[in-house]
Picture 1 (spheres, one colour):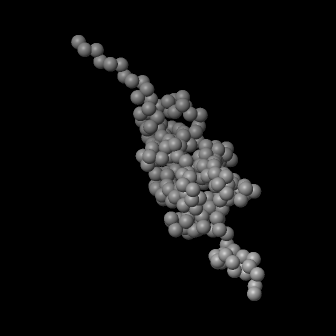
Picture 2 (cartoon, rainbow, N blue to C red):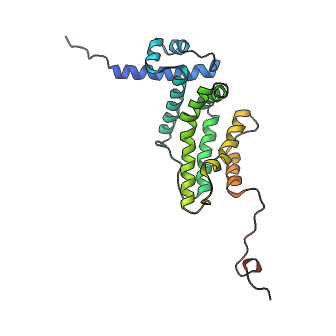
Picture 3 (cartoon, rainbow, N blue to C red):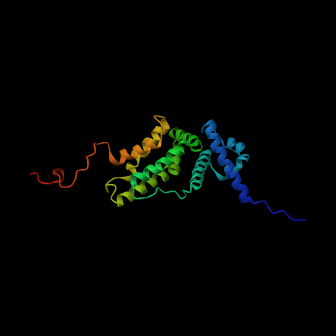
Length: 220
């Protein structure tokens, strides 16, 4: 009699973990964060609630990890892991490219529904809000800081500019428009944000050929 191989506990645990991730993301989108419970996640995933408590301390921990996993899977599918903002030497083009990817994610129901639920709950739940920022937002914002510092080293951004403040010129308006539905989000919108952030709102001085009075030539 051929002896059957013992069940692979690692694979079984991974299947359970994936089912819990999917259940948490689905429930928070369907009924909202406040009504989502560990018991509900367990029932939806087909596992015992003690399985969840063995790996996580709260439903916030489950949902945050599920969302991080979702982001990582999307990056792998797109061949963008580990993800960094590209440095092609053209700061405007690089920022526009990454913001276009952000637009795609914000309009993708897989991301939009749970991220809206997390963001909304984080406004009234201080602990969840802090975890949301620390685990989800800050790592992404640091990518912008790194790219802007690279641009400073290349002489494309003034050395006294604070990258952490500068990134808010294009990231924050997009987040506000998306969260509050103040207008549509699109590639054209984020491209314009980058143009305004990098070039400002003041009228641009037209290029003047060298040797003209504007360049210091002596008038006859």
